Image 1 (cartoon, rainbow, N blue to C red):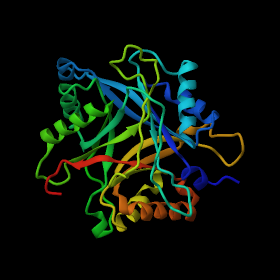
Image 2 (image 1 turned 60 degrees about the vertical axis):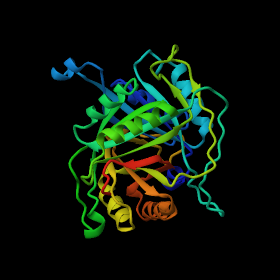
Image 3 (image 1 turned 45 degrees about the vertical axis):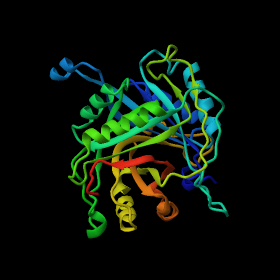
Image 4 (image 1 turned 90 degrees about the vertical axis):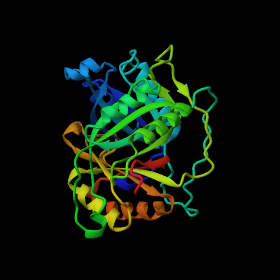
Length: 344
């Protein structure tokens, strides 16, 4: 019998799609039918580059972010092709999609998690740049990014766990956060990160963090002549990043326990995003038709490389101790991880 942990810790890639509202459910169900492990949907909004519209409160465009986990990197690529070909995705400027490779979390004797992958050849070399700041500062991040050549971004509402909760063993929630996601070529992502750090760095603790992720395949990136063309990135990873990002999908009621346990073990802070989830059942060939009644959270934690094995084991033990966690755990390198607070 397939257990939750067999699914949750064996994922090798994430297919992430940003689409107009109303499309997420059909795409998520299709992905599960095609063999995806699970899918979670989050609400967000894009912004249009018109300052006058912001003054009128008309600058936000509703978006849905779909995070689909699969067992193989090649499967994610094939799934992206199918979603495009059947017409769920591909209209000009209506959304973007990209594939994020993951570290291998399966139990192995050598316990090596380093990735060494090659994905074809291409002139494209993309990164997903993620910035987490206080609520309301997401628009400032977008403005700075546009001034430095970015085409657009998606803002997702989130919450932050208090950094001091590990010391007092008490769960606290800081004011709401904005998570800003944009995808660009590697060189531009690096320059955007430097521009944001220069503009937003402060001596006040807790201002926010910024990092980027490897992207191996994209669809719908604005600025290309053919937005329906799949772009494959060529990349090889041989040296681990000093930081790892953990994406933990958990049933909402168990979020507090996840954060308390990880912070007691040394993790300092997390970002929590409310979502609606789909999971396979243990019954072969079936999945939750009432999927979007399942309340799921994504807990995003950036940890030091030396903490990786310990944190993964903690999450595995929690999942095996109580099936109500229903964990789906993904890990990948957090490239160029930086904090906006110089004092931290």
